[in-house]
Length: 199
Image 1 (cartoon, rainbow, N blue to C red):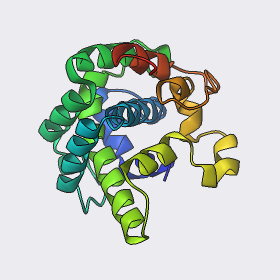
Image 2 (cartoon, helix red, strand yellow):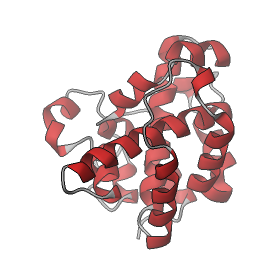
Image 3 (cartoon, one colour):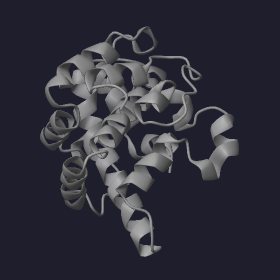
Image 4 (cartoon, rainbow, N blue to C red):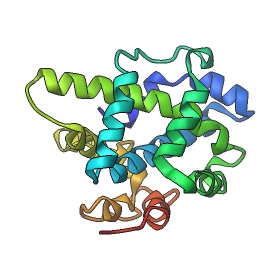
């Protein structure tokens, strides 16, 4: 699973219409917002308490089959997820993403609560598939998503992989830093600074 999976499950046209931007800008914003949420979840999963809280939240999103329209998304639930993932820094994360010139006109304060339940549903389904296959905990799934997927190295290096979008997130997650390789906003620096940075 990679960022393309998230894009497939998101009603890009509806989001573009709701936020008053083009579909291209909406797609870029979904990529950056999705990457920020995954990075925040991975940071939370580094502690046993955080991991347990994520596992409990994932159980509620089991069986998610995508959102055909914004009507399928529980934005109130999404707001709770965003608050849990980023804690007291949720507004600051949204504001920093909103200020990015590549996604001009996007209000991430409105977008992140739309994306959060979709991202959680995809992770829940990925985790179920992994556990049926006899391995792979939450850390493995998040690591696979954030790593651009070692299994999909060719695809990731071709651009469009999650690794490209995350750029500097490697340092935050304790991995190698291919910092800034994807251009765009330095989500790693953003989340690292807000959530306590490197270990």
